[in-house]
Amino acid sequence: MASPHAPGAAARRRDGRPRRGVKPSRILLVALLTVAALYFLLPVYWLLVASTKSSADLFGTFGLWFSDPQWPHNLSNVFSYDDGVFWSWTWNSVLYAGVGGTLATLLAGAAGYALAVYRFRGREAVFKAVLAGVLLPSTALALPMYLLFSKVGLANTYWAVLIPSMVSPFGVYLCRIYAEAAVPTEMLEAARVDGAGEWRIFGTLVLRTMTPALVTVFLFQFVGIWNNYFLPLVMLSDDRKYPITLGLTTWQTAADRTPELYQLTVGGAFVSVLPLAAAMLVLQRYWRSGLTQGSVKG
Image (cartoon, rainbow, N blue to C red; front, side, top):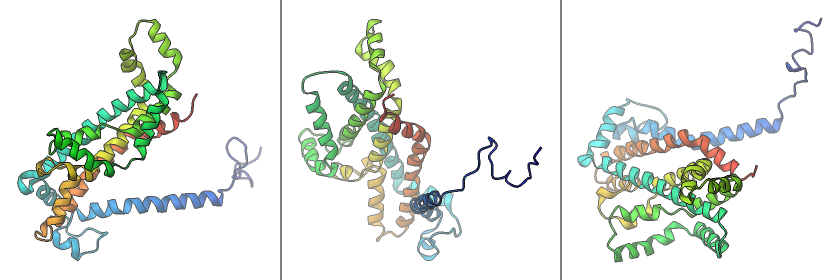
């Protein structure tokens, strides 16, 4: 019986097959991915470090390392400055991104499902119009929407940001592609034979089947609304209705006159990243499956 320490034993796997060496291309790929990860994580790390410093240390010390951390004090100043206006900006962002993202996801799911399942005249023309909406930049639509909302008296209201946020042409496109691949016709026909109405079928069967795609749409829409700057800038004039992105810009603009606002801006920016990071960590497994399962028909 051969000894496990005999020459050649280490070169074989437990299943008896010979081990293969690591390919240089694999090493290069891992190295490139590591560099890319560090490139994208470095600004987040700098933001973490900078949020613990005083205004003087922010400019007078090395930017990538801690010095005299004052995290609790800094965060307290962020939330208490100007009668707690940062709280208002935070809740506004949660409202715009949470409610807008949820409604946009439901509308996109319903529209995508309808375009995938129902046959009606002009269906392809509607879908092409949706694709055209994907290609239109949101900044080009901001001014016309402001003029429209001004006419109906909705400018400088929460609705002026919420209503445009409820529309997601990319979400409609993604949901149609996913519904065509993942929603079986046999399941719909069986539900109709059992006496279920179309709304019940959509609410109980289709939404559950399309969960990966819907979570993907919600994640994209939530991040897009949370980071949206230009639309609130055009629509809103009351700073108490600002989202975090626009509010932090006002602090940065005023920092030349009030230097302490530099630190508050950095601390507020760090806080604004946390909900996005939490959403990515919680929903990433649905995100991955939503991008792959919807493109392959089983």
